[in-house]
Structure formats: C-alpha cells, structure tokens
Image: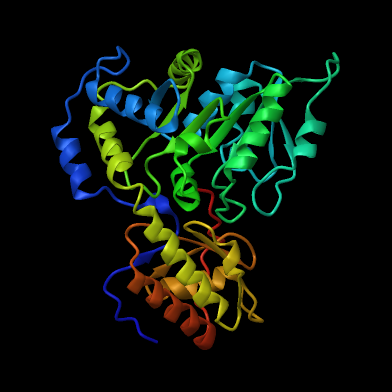
Length: 363
C-alpha cells in the first residue's frame, strides 16, 4: 500500500474550499463601514451585484446558508403557518429544525423524487383548504441543486411550473440555492432565468465558489426589508462585514464559470467508479459536482471504505451504511481524481481501515 502521498485530497464537501489569492487580497484591501447602518460599501456592492445576477430587486448578506433559509422562511411565514417541502430537503433534514424552533413554522413534507423534484400533484394535494383545524399554507420550498438527491439539477421548465402552481394558489416560492451556481452552469442558463419564478432565494458563496464565509438572500425590496429585520432577530447583524463580502465579490465574478471543471471531474470520477468492481453508481445521474456511490463488496461498509481511503490520503465521507459522497471542488485536479480512483481500488483489494464513527455528511 502506497502511503507516500504528500497532499491530502479532500472530497468531504465543497465547503472545505479555501479563499483564492485574489480573495485574500480583496479582503485585505476592502473598504468597510457599519453594515447594520447600511454604511459598508463593499457589502452594499456585493448585495447589489448578486441581486442583479439573480434577477431580483434587492439582497441581504448573511453569514451562512442556514441563516439565509431561516430568515427567508420567517419572512414569508408567521407562527403556525405551513411550508411545503421535500422530505429530503436540507431545510428539513439539516438545519436543526430552526424554522419550527424559532419561527413556529410547520413543515409539511412530501416525497422528493430521485432527481430532487417534487411531484406537482403532490404539491397541489398538500396545499391546505381554509379550515380552522389546519395550519395555513404559505410557502413552497425547492432545493436546486439537490444535495441529498445526488446534486441533481431542477430544470427551468420545472422551476417555472412550481412557481406558477404556487402563485396560482396564493403561495410564495423559496429556493434553497446553496448550489444554484452549479445548476446554472450545468444547464447553461443564467441564474436569473432559472430563478425567474422564485419569490426568494438563498445562495452560498462558500461552497464551490470558494469564499471563506457567507451567503446572500435575494428577493423583492419588500421581502428583503423583512429579511433584514429577521436577520437582526437571529443575531445576524454584522458590522465591518466588507472584509468578508470582498471575497464574495471575487467569488461571484471569477469563480462561477470554473464550476464546469468540477462537473467534468465529477463525471470522470463517476465513470471510473462505475468501472470498479465492488462499487455501484450510475454516471448518468451525476449532473454537477456531487458524486454519490454505493460500496457493494461483501464485508465492507461505507465507513470502512472511508477509513481506508483516509489512510491513503483521500477524504470521502460515508453518508449511510453503504453510501458515500464525493464533492468535487476547485482544490481537486484531474490528477487527483485518478489518484482517488487508484485509492478506492487499493482499499477494495487490500482491505479497509478501522472506521471512526459514521462520518455522515450534512452540507
């Protein structure tokens, strides 16, 4: 077994990305002010830039995607109101129940299909009638790309159809767009077109785009006014935040188009895994930078494979008893993909290491 690796290949998540030299320089030179007073020019520039890119009237900078989704739901719904979302949605599964705990918003889950979409008939059936026994349905939430459904992309016509359905019933549509940039690149459309039917969206700067921290929520001017108040309520008001917003500006102006490289590397990894005995994967279902696969070799669990890979300098998290996820990112080269495939084959041939916990991934 070759343990001569000099650099770890980190495929646990695209959140592990580190800021580029251009980001670090921009952060060091950022002009700043008090953002709560609306006086940080770098934050203001980032918000205006992202709002324009997403085709929305206004935007607000927040510290994380979880905060972005939380204040969005709080801005659409009151206590006792209901939102419709998938049973595999990140908002439902991996955000600590914040919308219920802090907002009293009732989640009504319906099944996500394999591609991350929600059946339109299921959405329609989930909308409550006007009955005092029921919570009031106010919101539909989609996720694009969909993390727990394999990084799959929801196409423009589907996004439009859900928006038309929601608006026809007096509801709003929020999109968890943590990886919306990946979806837009995969579909070769602008994010504004992809989000045309959405009333609000939360987008992440610190995943594939590589910024060290931050997300942006965008929507109408009235919505963002409410969102700023809710950001303050949950402790998200920042002061000289231009220091981190500067990296976000570099992220959205320099790092979006290169996501195609991550997608290409993901497909190469998927094809290589498909050709590996003891691994099951359908490369056709790998549409962006996330690669989910199953270990089928008898006597080996996902946690054991993960542990064996770690011994060989490759970090991939188990996401279930036999399932793993690799997240391609801008620190992972085409050569790293080939080294990863060699490591997988070596573990399967030589035996796994001892697992340390399940390592289940949530971001």
